[in-house]
Length: 200
Image 1 (spheres, rainbow, N blue to C red):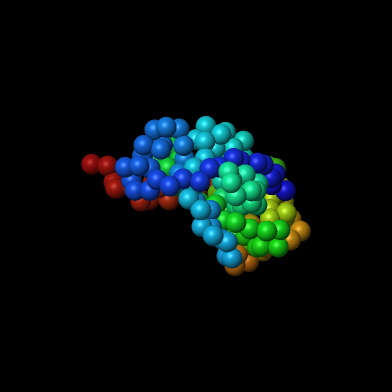
Image 2 (cartoon, one colour):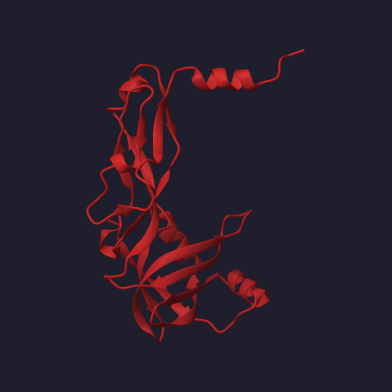
C-alpha cells in the first residue's frame, strides 16, 4: 500500500501570475487544498521538500498528512500537479481533503513481470497501458500494480479483467481493455516496411 507522509504547508494571500512567479522564485510551490464540506485554503509548500516527496514516490498519487500552519493537520490526496512544459518543475499543486472513508481515483503505474512463454519463443512484448486508473479507499491505495505475464504465448493478450488487483481496489476501465500483447516476431518490422515508400 502507498505510504502516508507528512508535509508542512502555510497559507498564502498572494494571487495573480506575477505574485505566484515571485513565490516560485523564493522557493515555494503555490498550492491549494479543497474538499467537500471544508473551506478552500490557498497554500504554499517548500519546493525542495515537495520535489523530494515526488522523487521518493513511485507515482504522483500521494496521500499526505498536510500540516497547515494555523489550521492543524488534514489528510489529503495529491489530486493534480501542474508542471512547466520545458523544465518539468512543479508550478502548482492541488490537494483534496479526504478522510479514510473517502474513495479516491488514481492512475497507478503497471509493471509487467517475468519472461513470457511467447517472448522465449521469439515474440515481443507490446505494453499498451502503463498506468491503470483505479478507485479505492485511501488505506487501500497501492503504489504499483504488479502483473505476471509468464503464461502469455505469442498472439496472446492480457486484459484488465484478468489482472488480480489488491483487495479493495477496482479498475475504472472495462474488463476487455488490453494492457499488453505478445506480438509475433518480425511483425512490427514487416508492417513498417510495408508502410514505407518504395526506394527510387
